[in-house]
Image (cartoon, rainbow, N blue to C red; front, side):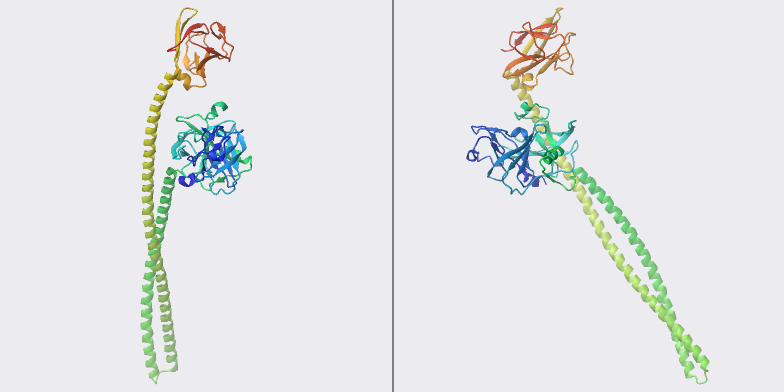
Length: 505
């Protein structure tokens, strides 16, 4: 089913300010956004909504100012795309092309995924190779504004924003978007995520499309997971077992009725045999009377009447015997039919049990393979993260702050360069661990007092609206206004004055 869905997946190429001839020919099946010098700038993905040329992608990979071009999977042609609508709140964009001959479209799931559901993301690399990553949903995020997000670990590169998140049947559950908790400016940078990914749910995508009167294709049946399919198969086996049990009871009833009818038939045959013998005797006596010239007319009539009754009884006995024989034949045919049906159900039950066992074995192997791959991926990511952090730490100096308060009590803290590079929102110094990354235990220091940020390789500090304030080189900081901090400056936080040293500077 996943392979069938991949045929419906669109990988679009947006070329800003470039002609069709300038499009790199070795990037089939991919999505690129280039700047005015035709240098690769953005890579994204998308899905075909209908055969009228409507496409959906992430709002972070489209341009509202420049001309865009779209390239499809398994299609060398390049199409001019029009941006019909963009919704930064949802992180979605609706495009359309002039071509109206699209045959394969994506199918949306009619069932929401739950925590633990197996999901897949698919995208193409710039060299044309295809990547399919499996993972699972870790959390369903329901926002008061009505936005629903899937938080998952099906890893994808930043060239797959706008691609689909699908279930085990290849049906669309959502569309991969930039972290919804980033600012609009940060989202436009298409950040490279590490181990947590987000997708806007199919509910919000359908709402987004309904505004433009577009109805996407929706699956008719619920997609069942491997566990649900195994459970359903087990229930089917139980139902088949009950049917076989009822069939056996019905068969036993027929066999019992057949035995009774055979006994009645034997009794009818015996009665017919006796009646036939009596009729033969009566007939012989009648013939003797007829030959006896001295017999009276009355005796002849009585003898003839007795012979007639005997013949009638013999005929009735013969009719009963024939009827019993017909019933016996019918019951025997019914018994043979039930025996054949019982044998067929028993054989089918063996196949079902065998299928359930095979399905469970395949599911077990699949789970083990996913866990093994996931563990290897986690280990590789941890090693890569450690190397990356080590490199980050080398790219900018650590900030060492040492000093004392107005009572002469010494205080000190360090802000590492790696921490600043990792935290674009800034590193907060304060008294409470729930609000500050660096703790400064002093009664004159607020819970979240001062924030360090790194912009264009320069360090800035910002007072967070505190009671006792902050200052640099004796100049009090204006609340929520940044001020540059350099090597050798004097930094005051509340009643504590520090000497600032950029280690290695």
